[in-house]
Image (tube, rainbow, N blue to C red; front, side, top):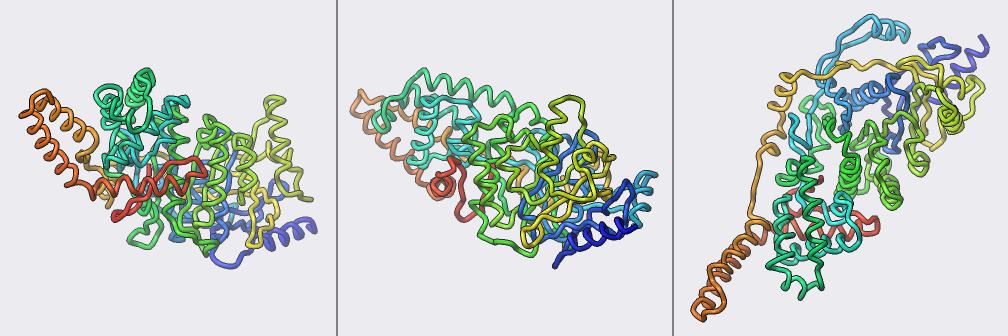
Length: 516
């Protein structure tokens, strides 16, 4: 009894916070739930990032879902990366069953089903609100990484972006990029060599083949207009709850390089566009990244350093990032060291390597007189987890084996009809689901080449006509200068701002900030 009283006192002292907090469960001792030992997450410190880890089937994704519900109720917008496709149910009413009823009875709480304000986003042909970005916004550095180019080929790509920026020639989609590549390798080779130096035809051919490979992976659907604006991630619903943006990326599991590059680009754009905020009473945005190992497994040491740096910086903007993965060792140590919240579901010890990983994981948690952490990690049941976080003073809270609350929304996927209903009612559908094909590099170069064909320079009269045609072309270009500047001038600003990180990106003037 004395041990129980001491434990209850320590938990209450450790998990009582000033300001608003989200209840996520109650602590357990010797396998017994103590309902009075409530575990809370303080909103004030949620911009310090976190990790939810555990073996398959232990409940870590549902922990994400439950915390997201609490954030939405507290008017905090959320972006959920739904890799496995099982988070869309947060937009539908939950339903009680025997397991949920038993869990809430043990916690001495009443289960109240709920559904939450959701927008379903997509980067592919899946149903949802289209996420797009232009090639110019994506930037040369990330384009080089996605295409897997060497230094020589990367130099050609950087030159192409420079040429298009200088010529006020927007690169909107892959069709534009391919057209410029073809121009650089043929009719425009002499022009560009005069401006920027020698260009290898072999390099342009290799780049072209890699761009076509990217098209075959479905990238044409992503590159283009209208670009998604980051402000639309930070919306509050009509009833005052935070909007939950579920990005359905189930078809990116076999393209981890594209996914990791997307994440870096998105974080870079959020960082560049958000003002300094410090530690607010509650965060402006929380991002949950399920299957987070996909972000890191294809990352080079240089890219890891960039991700680490941006994670350090973005918390000052009031934005928190939470990773979900099977094993904490999937996350680089440099990233783990920055995380304020750690929720550890059960791990399995099947091999010597598993046992070593469990021992390392246990050593990363605060020491406690109430548990033998290394053993407890393998004994936790479904929906149970070890919890610790940093309080307002930056001090770790006591380690608590916790019975987690179950989500109040549906713990299953939406039907096709439900998805259609959510997408059709979204305020963002009309804004982003219309395909736009503005005049850009493809049209401009096509006009330029057509003018050259119709007005060969051999004949004087033809030369005059060529000059006239050129003047007409220039008028076409000048008529869209303002539009071009919006797309290209901002790119240079953000590329310079994030140059020390080696990242592309951009801000847009007069139309909000967009991201990949």
